[in-house]
Image (tube, rainbow, N blue to C red; front, side):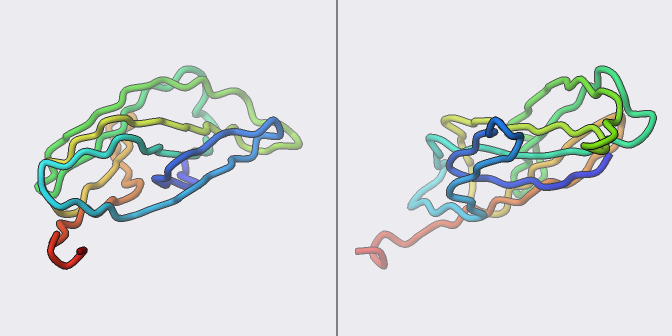
Length: 136
């Protein structure tokens, strides 16, 4: 397995030709207080599979807080087919809308993929506490 990309954005959609349209990629969020809530965001991930990685594959994605405690867990399954002569290695494209996500504290949150006992980092998201007086 190989991660092709992982990103957090405002919106993502798969086109009819298999390409991904992504809008508003971000790595930081700003909040005046904590816990903070993000009403809407999307995690987009693409994985290619190696020989021998076929059939139904279970996995999970955790969002870990700055102390490395899970604050959000997504469990899923994908169906991995055979390699295609023209398209190459099988690929899984995940578009996961996340709504009303709570961030307990400022700091860096990490998304990680867990599959078959292995954990792979995907993408970080930094939550920054702002000073309301400085924004006025």
